[in-house]
Image 1 (cartoon, rainbow, N blue to C red):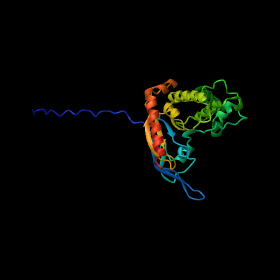
Image 2 (cartoon, rainbow, N blue to C red):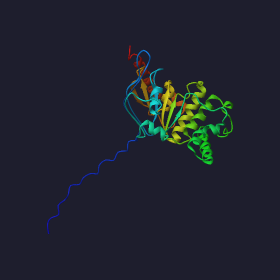
Image 3 (cartoon, helix red, strand yellow):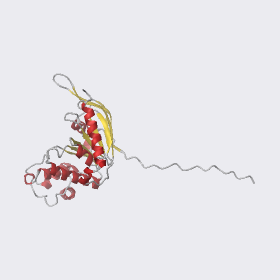
Length: 278
């Protein structure tokens, strides 16, 4: 009988946590607008990955291309060059498949429709039956703290409540991605703080991927997992800052050293950006 041969013992490969999948993948994207005198470069060489479950804020000076970039993701603007996918699809196909909800700067509610019927409008267009529309409206209005206001009209609500209705409407068809174009910019500071807190809780509850345009450093730090700092036009990415505050956030966190350090880095990036073209 032959001798048994001892085989070498191999260690199993180390397991690593799976990386979250990319929801938005942008590579070397630029956008040039035609103008009467000369072309205007709005975005220049943007490369960015937004992962599932991220809350990404775009911050930069007025005219730097934040909203333009959001509109490119939403297929409301077409890039001049570069590549972009949303959920692995071209933006046009992602839009057709209703892969995202969009919240504009103004609530854009129909004054003759009740709160509930404003929320269910996209569902009506999609042909979803009445019972399911009402169920979704009830769920989403509860998430934004407006249970009991279903039969009110927009003119009976405050500005902050109207914006919450627009968020509920964007969530009503249950998209995985929420695009928000400075939705709280026109509100007073107290209302804005309250809505920041509510939005942070909503994000933690739903796990949505969010892309959020803002001019406020404090707002960006409070809400985000990552902050994209953009330069004055032409819009370029100057810095991408991880914001590793706890997922459940309170307004009191803004006084912490960690919060202030992140805010200082954003402020420094914005200041550096202003000297970029000097």
